Amino acid sequence: MIKKLQRKFIMISGLAVIVIMVCFLLPVNLINRVRVGNELKRTLRFIMDSGGDLSGLKETEREEGGWQDVLVDIIGRNTGLNLTPESRYQLRFFTVTFAEDGTCLDVALSHIAAVGYEDAQDLGRRALNSHSGSGFLLSNQNSYYYLQEKGKKHETTIGFLDCTREVRSLNIFFYVSTGFAVVLTAAFVLLMAVLSKRVMQPYIDNMESQREFITNAGHELKTPFAIISANTEVIEMINGKSEWTDSILSQVKRGTTLINDLITLSRAEEAEQVVLTDVDLSKTLQESAESFRPVIEKDQKRLEVQIQEGVHVRAEQKMLTELCNILVDNAAKYCDDKGTVSVVLKKRGRSGAVLQVSNDFEEGSGKDYSRFFRRFYRGDQSHNSKQSGYGIGLSMAQTIAEKMKGTITAHWKDGVITFAVTL
Image (tube, rainbow, N blue to C red; front, side, top):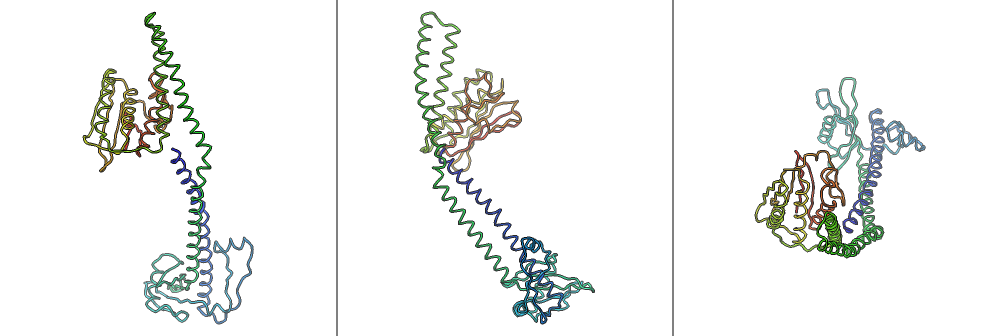
């Protein structure tokens, strides 16, 4: 139980760090990409408006402003350019013009050497078919930013700007930031793994104190219950039985059962390691179901057993027997009058099994059945005060199932409640 809580604590802490990292790095990388895209778009529009002639390019570099200018730059409404007279020797671009019917009219490659005529046409058609006015394209490990413009004669001119260096910088920033996030998350998870026991130590001490108290109190309470029972039996021998002595013995029996169940549950939770061996589940479940048949039929209820023979699982024999007894006993107690208790066992895969214990329960619609596994939970209808028990049986069943690396669930359908155990 403690190790399970530690694992959950570490997983939740790690998940929280991952969410924080994603919420931080995703917007940062997205904003960085949008900013670079807007800058490339403004540059390419300037080139296309000038007809590709940058011989008269003058200083156009704008001064850096405050955060307002940065925000305007990100959303693409800033018309300023980061160009200098040296930019005409650094920028590599070309244009491709298509007619309205898709025929290539012109290819201008005078300002680029890495792209041939066929490659330029291919890039132009890819941009034309992209149904987007601008964007990024990749060709031969080089990246290009394209921008479409419609002419007066319905022709489409597509300008391409080599942005391999910019895209590479974006990718490097993405990989570095992602790697940093992974390393930081791993370091945080490792730190939580080291400190988790110290963080949870007060809770661990509280659990151990509760278990110790339950065990000690249980053993201490057995003595007065035994004395009360013995004295009552002596009174019956002297004065004969009466409704008062029957009531005393009945309550002593209920109290003793509660003590034994609490001690069993405490010991089951305390056992961190359970030795699992090959157990014949078919035989164990058959014996458990048949032992309750007289009790079920005495209350004018029916027991239906459908157990596949030869089903073996990895389990602990005593715990498995206790699990079967709890489920069948629970179904027998809370089955509707003249209803049916059903016990079904099927093989699952090569070495697993599914055990289902069902009983009629007409008033089970709309209930939260996950709460049935809470300790001392007794629902208004299915776990009422007219039935014996203290609402810890299903909690014990869940603990036992988890110790044997299994799961237990409860669901209701068409007037029947079913508890299913998967091992």
